[in-house]
Image (cartoon, rainbow over all chains, first blue to last red; front, side, top):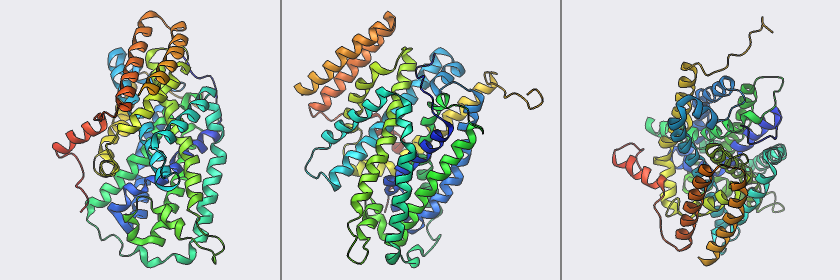
Length: 370
Length: 73
């Protein structure tokens, strides 16, 4: 049974993947304190480490065309096993939605609306996302192109404006940290921005067939998004050096320093505006995926009745998911990178192996037959 | 807290009504339980009660068995 009838084009899918990764610019604060001036290297290591993960995702997409993650779980693991694994994925998506909602609320509170309680900001945001969701996936994904362009433009402009304060010596010394730091940093980059792409396994059945295979669009989107993350981290390192590790948002501090002959300054507000837009996209996609997965598990004919209900849960969960920001930051560095691998790599890999072993996959038609 | 209860209750009423029309009895019961759970979580949060989230519980467990990265110096 298909809960979502709206279709998105392959290029919209690619841009959505790029936009999804670009919105993680805020999360660089999880790995910059670990790898300091070598953070840009860790982004490259993370990109390489993400290749097998993306291969698993594209393997699932090509082996089970027209089916989303929950449907594949139910087929591969049976009724009870499938329901348990599906519940784990739903909890994971719900937690990601709440964590990003919390991040957004904290960002707005720390930078723009200092005296406004976070819950008001997040509630308004979730209402906006719920409205978008009620209109369908097509509406949310349609804006990816505009968001990606805005993000690219801001990245380029910010690099140009900070050229005069960049110092190549800020990248030194290189590769002098203990090996475990690079492993931890790479794991963090892999799990936190890149591994979140598992959410797109819920969207894959709604992608209309393009000229190339879905794998091409997934990898292209990933490259576009991760190139932006790399540029942002390299820019922050060139401007701030190892001091960047002290800030909760190095990009915000970098843009605060941007100054063009006293005419153009206080550019950090642009960063906040763009990040709020990008986070809208990411939260909307994660929220949609949570709602769709829950509706699929319950066997509903439509996901619409769950939208506002789960929105209320997202707001409440975002309040208590972590007791304070110190615990959140420590967990993001020490626990989450390892824990998230279970949902982002090991379970999808198990799903692919079990599905193929049970002969549930669909073999692509051979060229001769065509 | 009362405002939260009214708001979530109102949403639940209309959404449940819509959901009941399109699903069999067993699913309706499961949905009602889900909504009741959400309502309780929202009420507890609105009441200022600090609930330990599953992420924190899992994190504590992983830390206790040494399955985590070392803290920053």
